[in-house]
Image: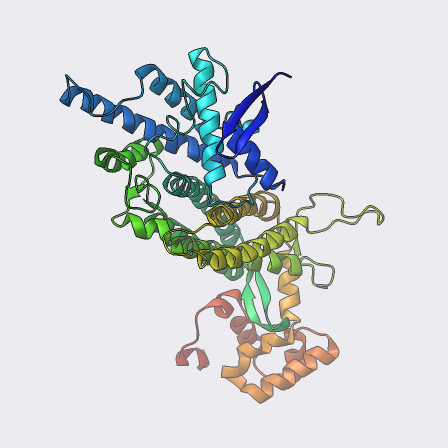
Length: 482
């Protein structure tokens, strides 16, 4: 393949003639030889941020031409180049040319390599649209044209926030979908009785409806917290240039570029009132990720509960999970709870990401945090994991889950812990004797009571009915003979 020569302040390099990347990207690939994949949503968001910059530049250029009809105070990018830059940026925003993006997720340089790889792709695509070849930078330059009035330090973080908001929207929908499925199971199993457990020991009576209602309420809190993330993440520093002072950027551009981005994305992005703060302090990512971690905790709890109840260790086997795939290459017929394990594994990766984000957000020094590429990668990774975990849990574990209500009810009435319901009527010590008899003889509470006549049998049936067992507390009048 024919090579082209590109140069920078460090020297020259040979590059494949049809490559859309350039010398900056190639040097970064050599310096960061890892194969961690850069998040494609962040890549696409870079395209839309660039498009907002070019559209704003076009409005700025038109305003200048209208005001200075005789002599322009600055040289402007020609109209044809600007149109082709916008077309190229729009294609990047659609995810095109991702194969020419060489920068791994783990890198150094505060995101300069991300920005320059995007600039080179956009410049070279624009050159092709002009009828020229990649690398003809005398006509369209990655810095002079593709990076006009921009900095790595405002475009890369802004694109990260755009990508984050898009994934937060998806996550909101997924949480709602999971919650709806959980609420359907709750409604179906409202009176499906079961023994509660504390510290993995049998405890007082409850129902599967109660259990799933707790999951549903936890997911409601998760949804509410995620919806509040937009208030924090929407504040961007686009237009702030290198450190938030707006140096080298026209005031017109600073005022207009974020509203332009808002229209392009249909997201509630807003310009920071203190661009220096938004550029140098990344505590917002720690705050946002804490919300994601809380959701991961709830997802893990739910998956772990259901995995335990459906396990072979549980002798009751009141719950059966959908069988998704063969579980062993050596043990015939074995099926493992892979969906629950996927959710739990995802949660623990998110906990690790939380530690990474917290520690690196604290590593910001003076006007800039050099670690935003790794912070952003961890944040977007957590969002991807939670979206996938919700889909998998909802579609492949909650859907198709079976509850053996007859077996669960029978197990409950053979569970000595049900005697707790009798404490207000016969006292703790008498109830304890009944529980001991149930345990020793492995008989139901009705069988033991019939033998010992601790309480009238019809009263026992009333006390231990699902309605009475699930109602909130008791009234003194309940204790009167009726």
